[in-house]
Length: 135
Image 1 (tube, rainbow, N blue to C red):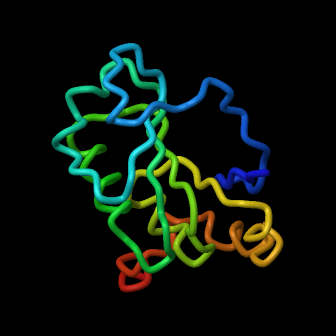
Image 2: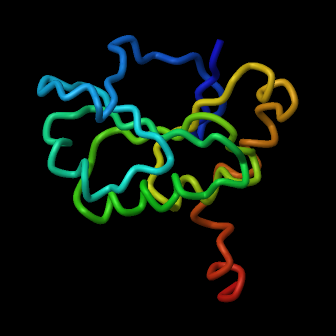
């Protein structure tokens, strides 16, 4: 079972339409699952009409997904963007600043890092280093 983390806390996964991968080669993609080694430039032209992009984080130490998300947003992707895998509560603000709308974690991580830890970082716009410097 997975848990979706947003600025308002934990919720169940409401996405029921499945995911395709870049290798599927289908044109009627509603949601795309991207591995962490994806070159965003190779998929940006395929994102017209794609409602959700989910980017894998195989390890909390693997930050390539943040770069992919930021690049997709900079290049104009406005759909739902989800980080999936080993993203920690401490990384939530970075995920949001990179362009992610939500984070998908498994139940065991949600038990080790309860909702309160994620909510403590939900005001991600206020607690960046620039705000602290201005503060």
